[in-house]
Image 1: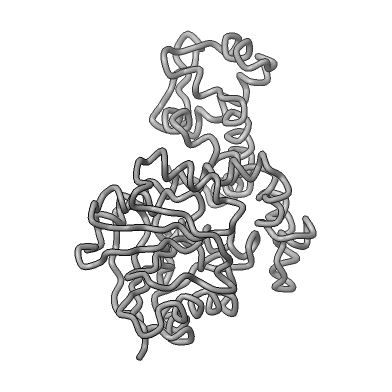
Image 2: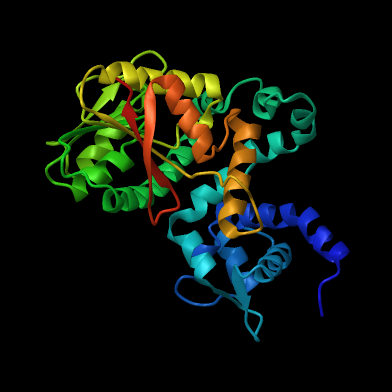
Length: 337
């Protein structure tokens, strides 16, 4: 029997119940308690310092979404979703299902009416300033981005032919997960991570932990002001989608200035927004990311045609799009001479 449309709409309207529940169990470390064996709500409550009847009710809600399994004896056991949560995804859930993101989404209607950024309206500052002022949240956000980036770096290193390149720099590279991943996969490369000086200590520690400090370094600076010259390729992952067209063009133009007359290329790593959306998993992910950029950063996801126009304004030609198996594409740009 088909589900009535009203029931489907109700499920959509109450989806935030699930995200709040997921955030709660991620913050409490509940999934980690189930990695060795099933446990009762009372056992989980004792381990997490919570109220067993309330925890049981939240666990049962998440059972309906496939996060946990409720056994015949009432104990709860893990699933691939909870194993992923316990395996390092808890930070991401706390970032994207937490109050930092939820509060500005609650003001979405005003953004639709005005086009103004919700995050700045709610918090009085942009997301990057917000995170800089709140070290604990900032560190969680950095860990989340690094976790995603390690996965993407594997896909980029496998999909792109780096054999003719020698020196590569990652613009806005954070702690260096992308650059170290690529350098570890291609032993002939020398790499650099370029980001704000405040992340230098963490980036150098990450580079040392990856055991590539002989071939990779951190360079501090601001990509709105200037970008280091002298590299064969300029990687930039999940940065351009954070910004509106004006500021995105400015970042790309700084890279173009750094390239000058050299035979270098731009390697933008982002998810492409389909020219036409449907109900597919890929289109849904792109649309969610796009609206989240609108609400949180004021940026946007872009189609291939929109990126080509952005490249042209900054002095590049979009030469090709190379898909990866990590949910992102490599959008290659060649300098216009």
